[in-house]
Length: 305
Ligand SMILES: Nc1ncnc2c1ncn2[C@@H]1O[C@H](COP(=O)(O)OP(=O)(O)OP(=O)(O)O)[C@@H](O)[C@H]1O
Image (cartoon, rainbow, N blue to C red; front, side, top):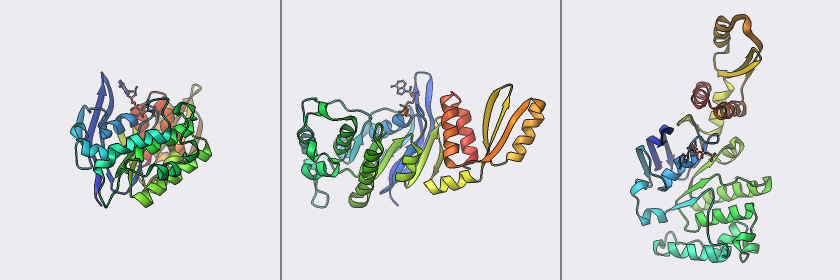
């Protein structure tokens, strides 16, 4: 399998905030890979480095064979980007915007891979035919997001980056979007890297899920593979002086023995249960959001080892 994206020891620091502390992963051609992680884990930072929009602090990155920090226009024409939000001319219409943007890709057209995408066909594909001549300001959030996706794919990219593409979608719009991604992959053979903090979305869309937490990738597997790994682990809950604790482990007996050795009579409300991937991810998110990113990453790594 060819490698479309190669990331080694990627590091990013904002001031004295180390957001990425050694991220490693590959994305192969024709794969759909979801980069999943809690708010603030560094998903947008990672994807924008790969898109060439942010300059990394350290590490090696190769996207379609080039370093995005120094890539040329030709490289850009082969990648598609859907950012978290776009700013463009409010009086334009979807049809006009897509036509203008599509013109940029014409010089990169080849007989085997004609570019851009035919605008009428593209509007139909993303479900915007009826709204093609409406002003951009008059589109709803979900309609706007569909246009964002159309902007990302108008050049028929080999590699598509989507940053939280379904944020704000209702369930119906989300389902349509998932169909669109499946269609892109099966008909266009587009390689897709998308970020989300929704485990359910990652399980539905991804060939492979990468979980980012505590500055690193803490799990890299198929959705089924991840679920199977977690199923072997247990979640231990307890409280001490009214404060509640949760820990995930694949050795609950040993953990509880150590817990009592340390906490003795202080330990109350002990509860041990087998975790599902959803439980494990939820616990990761809760710990991460409580400011314990390192500990969250460590215990997630333990249960998915
Ligand atoms: N330009 C910047 N300058 C300083 N800090 C930044 C900058 N961009 C992001 N950060 C910080 O880096 C961390 C990661 O942010 P990032 O947006 O990459 O996370 P994320 O996983 O995409 O989050 P979300 O799911 O909320 O979009 C956060 O703590 C954020 O505040």
